[in-house]
Length: 118
Image (cartoon, rainbow, N blue to C red; front, side, top):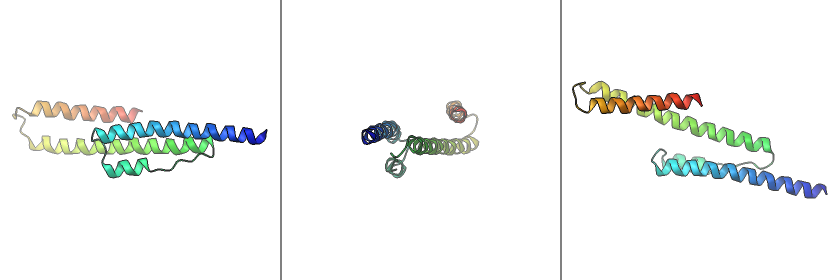
């Protein structure tokens, strides 16, 4: 009876880990397809082994991975904001592209602020 419970629990843990892995895979694939992630970073995240020995270890592992992934995206967004600020500083305010670029810059800043609220 105890052996059946252990097999059943192991099966549930494996399924839980697979569900989290599927969520992570969808996010990674979308980021790669949308050029929001380079191939090397994609491989780094996709190749992370996940534990299946306890619920806590699964939650800790995927919590850590999702936090690291969010931090990666925030850092890339910060880089884009800095590049945009440099470009805007060099651009004349009379340039016809300036309002459109400024709007894009403001949208990036707001996106970063929103991501930090989560």
